Length: 178
Image 1 (cartoon, helix red, strand yellow):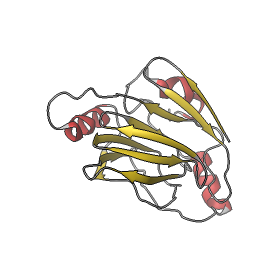
Image 2: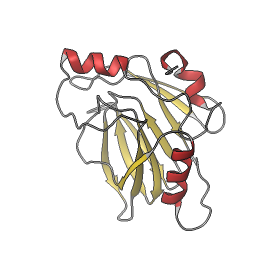
Image 3: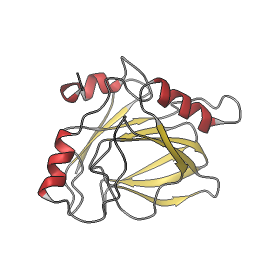
Image 4: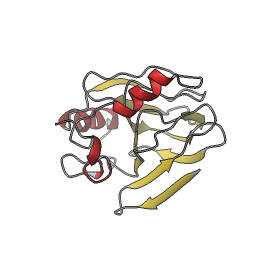
C-alpha cells in the first residue's frame, strides 16, 4: 500500500495508494519532516505558525487530529506538532502508523486519510492550508467531482516547512501554481 524512502536527513516521503473508501493522492506524496522545528523556547505552536505563514501557508487552527478516519478534498494540509506525541494512521483503515512528537511536521496532500489512534494529553497541532483552501471533512468514498477536485487542487510554490527550495519543489513540482 505505501512506498517509503528517506530523502535527505530531515524529510521522508510516502506514496499512498487508494485504500477502500479513502482515495489518498495517486500523484502527490505525503512529506514527513521529523524535528522540523527544534524545541527553541516554549511556544512551538507560534514557531510553526510563523514558519508556515512565512512560506505562504496561512495557519488556520490549533487543536489535535480527529480520532476517526477522514480526508480533505478542498485543501492540502500541513500539520505542525506543537506539543506532546501521538500515533497517527495515514492512508485510511489498516494504513501506515506513524509516531509523531513535538517539533515534527507532516504535509498531507488532498485525499490523504488520517486518524489519531492515541495521543498524550498535551498533544497540540497547528494546521495550515494554502490560500483559498480549506479542510472539508470527508468520511466516505469520494464522488467523481471530489476526485477531480483533489486532482486539480493547486498549491503555493513554497514548501510550508522548508521554503522555496524544500521538498515540495522536488516532489510536487508538476502541480505548482504559476
